[in-house]
Image (tube, rainbow, N blue to C red; front, side, top):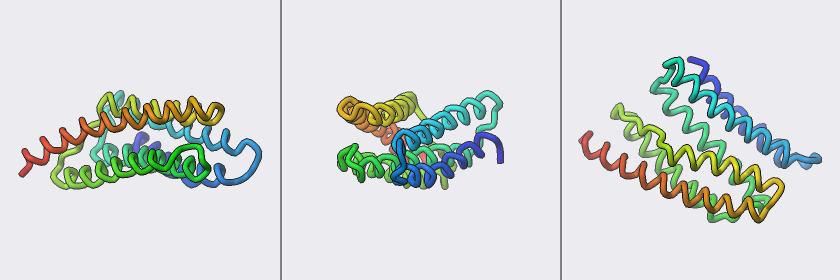
Amino acid sequence: MNLPNILSIFRIILIPIFVAIFFSGMQHSLIYSILIFLIAGFTDILDGFIARKYNLITKWGMVLDPLADKLMLLTVLSCLVIEGYAPIWVLIIISLKDLFMIFAGMKLFHKDVVIPANKIGKLTSLLFYISVFVLSFDKALGKLLLYCSVLSALIAFSNYFLYYKKSSSTQQ
C-alpha cells in the first residue's frame, strides 16, 4: 500500500459522505457536496502526480484509481439526476460506458494487460468536474458543459475500445 493508493481509497470513502451531504437538506448542501467532489478531483490529480513522480505506479493502483473515479462520477451523476440537475440519459450513457470499461478492464487485468489512461479521458474527467461545479450556480451552462462532457466521454470510449480490441486480439 502506498500513498497514491491510499488517496484512491480516500476518494472511495468520500462517496458516501458526498451522498449524505447532498441529500442532507441542510442549507448549502449542494455547495458542500460539490466541494467534496472537488476534493476528490484534487486527490485524483495528486495521486497520479505522486505515483508518476516517485515511481509508485502499481498494477493495483492502475485499477483502483479509475475505479474510484468511476464510482465517484456515477454517484454524483445519480444524485444530480435524482434532484433534477441532469437528465437521466446522461447517467445511462456514462453508466453503460463505465460498465463496459470495468468489465473489459477486469478481463484484460487477468491477462496482465491494463488499459492506460489517455489524454482524452483525462480531459473528459476535467470537463465533468467543471460541469458539476458550474451546475451548482448556473444550471443551463452546467447542463451544456455536461453534454460536452458526455460527448468527450464517448470519444474517449472509442479510443479505449480500439485499444481493448487490439489488446484482446493480441492476447488470444
